[in-house]
Image 1 (cartoon, one colour):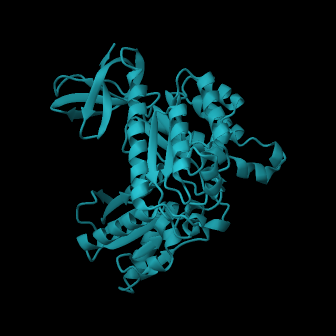
Image 2 (cartoon, helix red, strand yellow):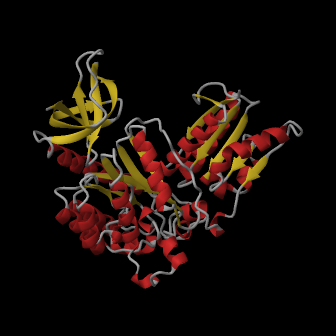
Image 3 (cartoon, rainbow, N blue to C red):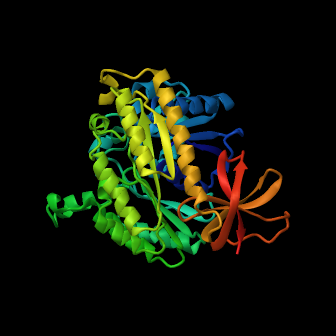
Length: 462
């Protein structure tokens, strides 16, 4: 029996795929050990979204080889897909497996090990032309490291080609998973006791558009991209035992009044919507090749706020995009203040080789990016605390996920539907655990959790 250590980098889609690879390896008799332990095989699921992600991927691959120079080090995923000669020339990598081949990880690994017996210096790479495949890589998850929440991958790939982003080259074009396969996976997870599912993918707002192209039931001009996604959400909502359905990142354009109305009719749907923004300035959005304006974005937020009672709206913002003037930045800041978010993920622009933005003029100096980022981080903290404060003294429902010791006391930790973290004191180590099901609580105040590096609400069960 060989010991295998796994390490995941990057997004929730990567996390899902790593969990499935872990599951497949265990079913074939491999022994999974922590990454910091000695192993016969190290598998690193890589990320390439930024130059920093590339560097972290290389660091983890090199660290694995340093831990055991005789081990087989396997690089998997996005960095492999875009790395080219860097992968071929890296002596720390024994086997490289690109995207859309993760489902075959056991067969690829065992074929490599058999060949390795004959050629001790073997270096192998298994990468398909991701930009010309229409195959959705079918993977099914039966259990995750979490005990209450499971991420469900519903699609792969992206057709947007934002000027700063390399992901369409790493993940290929949109490929959607069959609805019946998704529902079968959700039912299986429900039977195992999972209470919440999160529908995720590379660009879930595009879910089903490839089906439409194949069936040609409607003209593309008549097709509303949100319809197929909401059809799926309505089906998942009906699965018995699932108490919550949560959506991953959404394209603002698909959130119409009709889409918001249909979503609001689903009681299990969490009122938590991540609408990717990137900039609050139309001129910057145009350079980014984002396909909406700030007016359209604001209309989408307003549609959700009319349909839901104070939904949690979260977003991503890039500061220092090439050509971003001080005036454009201030326009973005004013827009963020006007919208008012629960959380904002603030990123400094990272030049990515192979993208149009990398060659754009007027690259913003790092010190200016840092100053702008710091200003928005302070705004984010202010808006986030204001959103959380609204829950103080009110009854809300929480799905508990784990028990943790914080500042010397034992707490049961979970999230509300709008993804506010809640901590309920348990008292003693032998106290009866709160159930992994929806519980009604009343938040009393803030509790700083240095371990989680976030503010959470101290609460009491009712």
